[in-house]
Length: 335
Image (tube, rainbow, N blue to C red):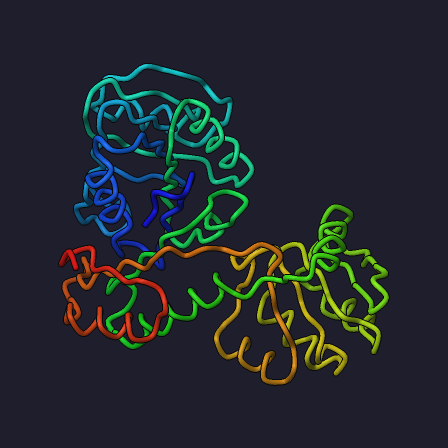
C-alpha cells in the first residue's frame, strides 16, 4: 500500500497506540525489498516509555538503511554506521546526524520538532538513496502529517486513549475527517490563495477574484477582523495558521456573512476543531476546505492498553472498519 510513495508519516492519536509496532511491521515487510530512510519527531526506540514507565517495542533496522537521528540517540543505538552528514539542526538530545547502517541492529530515533527542518531532513534522506522515507511521529504531533513534509500518512489509534471504546472510535473518526477534509479544486482560487499565504496570515477573496489582506500577526484572535470584512461579495477566506473552535464560534456570533463562504486552510493539520463546532459551522452554512490534501493510507488499531485494560479485538476492529472508508489494520492481532 505504501510502496508508491516517496515519504510517509506515522502519527498517533496518543501515546502507546501502536505507532512503533506499525513502524516495525513496515520495516519487516520492506526488508530486502526497498531502501528505507528513517527519522522521528521527538524520541522513539528507547526501552521504556518515559511517561508511563512501560516497556516499549524496539526499532530494528537492516543493513543499508539510512537514518537521521540526534547524536545522543545515535550513541544509544547498537548498529555499526557510516556518518554521511551532520545537519547543523540541534535538539535537546544533540545535533541531528545522518548515517547509513552497515549492520543490522536496534536504533534509538530522535529528531527535530520544527516542520521546516523535517522537510529538509526528508530531502537529505532521499538524496542519499532512500526510496521510502518514514517519519515516526511523536505524541499528538499531527502537524507532521502535513503534505509539505510527507506524501501520505498512517494514523495509529488504540485503547490507551480511553477506557471507552466509543470515545476512542469517535475521536479517531473525527481526526480522520479533519485530516482528509475536501480540498479546493478551482485553480484560480488556489492561485489567489497561495498569493495570500505569501503576503500574510489572512486574506479575503471576492467574487471578482480581487484580494483584501488583513493586517494581523496571527490567525488566533482574528475573528473580529475577519467578520468585519465579510460581505455579500466575499467568496473565500484564506487562513495561514490554525483554525480553532473559538475562532469559528466568534465569527458565527459576529456576522451572518460567513454563510456560503469557503474558509480555506493550508491542510487538515491546521484544524483544531471539535466535532460539535465543525458540525455547527457547516450546518449553519459555513464551508471549510483545504489548499493541500492529506492522503491517509490506513488506520492501525491497538486494542491493548499499557494501563491494564484492553478492548475486544474483533469488535474494535469491526467498529473502526464500519465507520471509516479507509483500510484499518490490527497491529497486535495481525489482521
